[in-house]
Image (cartoon, rainbow, N blue to C red; front, top):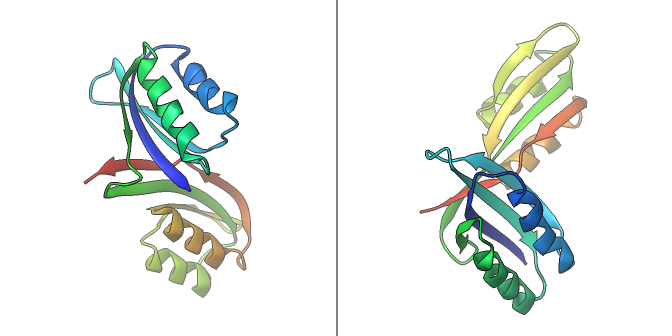
Length: 155
């Protein structure tokens, strides 16, 4: 099962390495990781998406996260109501085809740049929405793709 974990941490060098080390030491792959400064520049927020089939071990990891000196708080959003979003930048071949315009309008995407060879698109949405957009653009020809990790906030 995929778990969405939010952690507030001290904004210091080495914190990310210690946290990711906890997950890798237990054999969990981090599916998505997004880190950014909060409104307090001394605090960062991490959103970690991890696939954990063993709930006991995941509980142990959360307890060990709480014990790390640089951790302020840890919250498992999985069982709560929350919003999640992801940002994607997509470079597609060509410009202004009907399929491209249709996809852009359907997903409220924005064209950042367009010339005769490529169009660069920005889209924000849930993981499912982004995946659906990418499937719609496959036929057009995606030449480059940059996708952020998911971010999440409780309702």
